[in-house]
Amino acid sequence: MIPGGVNSPARAFRSVGGTPVFFTHGKGAWVYDEDGNRYIDLINSWGPLILGHSHPEIIEAAVAAMQRSSSFGAPTAAEIDMAHRVIGCFPSIEKVRMVNSGTEATMSAVRLARGYTGRDKIIKFAGNYHGHGDSFLIAAGSGLMTHGVPDSAGVTKGTAEDTLTATYNDLADVRRLVDANPEHIAAIILEPVVGNMGLVKPEPGFLAGLREICDRTGIVLIFDEVMTGFRLSLGGAQELLGVRPDITTLGKIIGGGLPVGAYGGKAEIMDYISPVGPIYQAGTLSGNPVAMAAGGVMLRLLKEDPDLYVRLEQTGAALEAGWNEIFTEKGIPYTVNRVGSMMTVFFNEGPVRNLTESKRSDTAKFGQFFHAMLGRGVYLPPSQFEALFISDCIGESELDQVLTATRESLKDF
Ligand code: PLP
Image 1: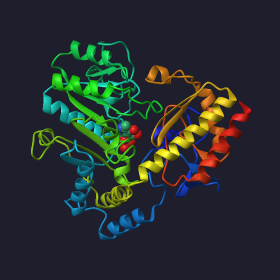
Image 2: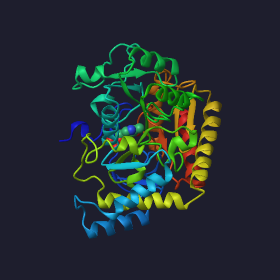
Image 3: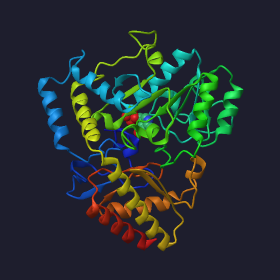
């Protein structure tokens, strides 16, 4: 009844084989399936549940909001509270607009950049995912300066031609595209730390180099922090890495597990949005009171805990060290890429700095590893090309269980 049995393809087990697990509930670090099995969750809804499943204060806030009514389609104070919290943590954001998903945020941000600059083309990076908007479903690096090739059927040739694809961590490639399209590029959009070709870090100087290109050419720099916002630090990847974009897109964590996205940036640019400016963007359920209540409490809890990101870093570092030891002992070619609580083990001796290098991984081996771990109660992303997300509920005991499962899983390799 449902295409592929799933409502989002990342949930299907196509790249690892087998059929997806159907879940009933989650508590803290653990999730429980329809067959009565339990797993340590290393996906956490693809990032939002940084405090683990079913946090009591988030539940309480969402239930209380629901009791006051699920939606008004009119302003509420909770939206102002959310805007304060986002702006307070992201100095590059002077004004912010709430939407309902990360996809909506990136689509709207690109329309805004186009309307603001009066230019049509955008540059994205192969292997970066920005949701399923038409402009973003082009990843094939089919040669610099040539027209984009649609990765998805249903994307028109015209749309594909307006999306130029560059190699991540390759400033020279970006410069070539910019020089070949003078005055035509509205925006450069990227994940400042990539989660969508497995975890890939920006090389030193890459983000600053993009900032310099954009400043020189009037291109709008968009950091897609749907995954990294409030995950790598309170101020996202931009705070951690010290480069400020013109527009930031957010999602995932800011909804506390409910469907939310946001885009924000310089007031001068944001004021091009309707009803102040000429660029239309709207949403019946945007700023929904239940989502704002859940997300508002989530952001308050993150802000009130000064040690949270230190703990997440320590847990991430411990898992990385454990995997390094076990994979090295076993003699399997591998690379662990990690920033804070996001990481990937590639079955590939690395380094992994872009899509071409990520694709060198042995995906059959990854599939074998995935199922061996699943059978031992650890729920990893069912794809070599997705990052895992650690929640604050992963303590020493869960970490030990993940490392024991890893050791046992690799016995058969
Ligand atoms: N941008 C990034 C970096 C993402 O990782 C995702 C989803 O994983 C999106 C945008 C799209 O967000 P959503 O799935 O909420 O539409």
